[in-house]
Length: 170
Image (tube, rainbow, N blue to C red; front, side, top):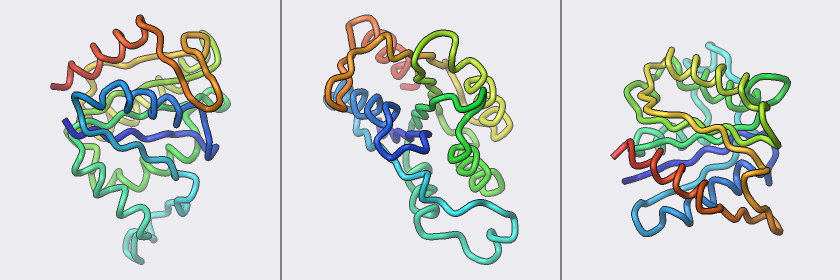
């Protein structure tokens, strides 16, 4: 399966990016997974820009979304919501419909429970509005994993959760 991981953090070297890299390592024998990070480089959406010409970096990510069989979005929670960079991506894709009927696994990755609940609610509402196919969602916490020098080690119970969630989309 072709998987695209999108780190929704505004930070260049975020724990959400490293979580996706850990998932990529976990699935390397079963799937072809690419991890995208760079939403912070996207131009701010406005409807007038759709006719003026969509920037190249946004077009490239839209093509990657189209080509993927599963999109995994890993997001932190900023002020009880999804980061602005993720909302910006969603707005760039709303009219053109890249997420319509696309398999999406939303993951919140935050420091500890119950953080992430508001971000998940917001993300689910946006994805449902765009008619994405969501089989499950995963709230994960930094207390569930071990982080060593920008690498995340996934314990057996998290590996089991991730594998089960991803395999729902097969």
